[in-house]
Image 1 (tube, rainbow, N blue to C red):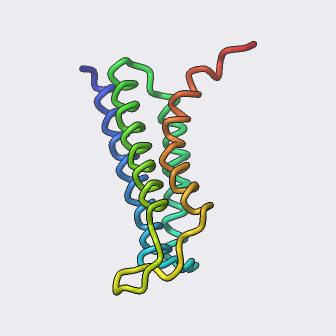
Image 2 (image 1 turned 180 degrees about the vertical axis):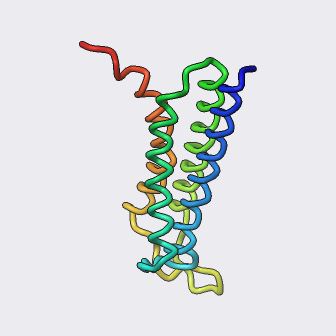
Length: 136
């Protein structure tokens, strides 16, 4: 395996873990026990981290050229998208209750779909970028 392939695979792993971590920080800061949107330093830093990581993912998709690199990037992107689907399903099955850990207000639909789209964008970048040079 070439040095470049190893570096690209490590970068995909770091970007995938960073996206997961930043999104989970955002979910926990806005939606831990109940939907309560707060504008604080944690939320702003999570959003800026997500923006930076998505830009990095877009640029990393540009440099992913080898067969091993593409398969590893696909594995990372599919695992992120799978986790996004699990989070989306979990949001759809939540219900209101007055228990100790129950929710008094559900998270809105746009928040649920934006979390899923954050986890889906790396796969979109990876799949679209090779076809950018095709002219019709």
